Amino acid sequence: MTENPGELTITRELPATPDAVFRAYVEPEQFIRFWGPVGTHVELDTVTIEPTVGGRYDSTMTIDETGEKYPMRATITEIRPGELIALAEEGVGMRSTLTFKDLGDGRSEVVLHQTEVPAMYCGPEAEAGLNSSFDRLVEHLAARH
Image (tube, rainbow, N blue to C red; front, side, top):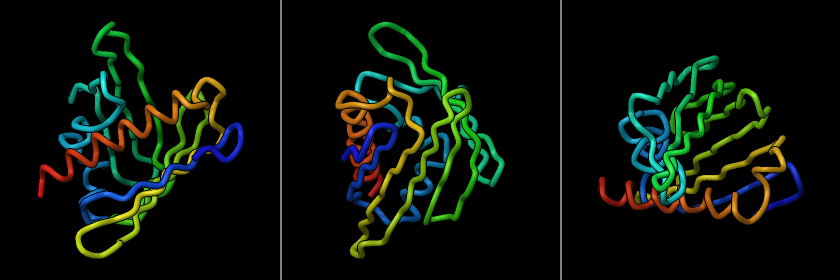
């Protein structure tokens, strides 16, 4: 749900433990299975994830239909395995924090909170794209269990 311009928060329930969800975000082989909305893909050779403070969190999303490429270059600013990943995206200044909460029964809640969101990444289309990526994550996690 959008709170105000320049800020976005999305909360989703996922069919996996916080540790499993965290691993999906830091293991490139899993990351490429869900990152980006439906109609996009990420090639493994474009992904660099160094799961430490100051580490890289880079990837390039490609639009399937047009081949347009959208690189993301970010630095990990905070990381706690199974609990939290915080990123600062270079070039756009956006900050994203993913927090993972154990709901029991092999389920977890993930909260994505973004600040300093550029106008081009605000609005219903951007929010729908993020939710589409979360839908892909749900499918990926469900298939692994």
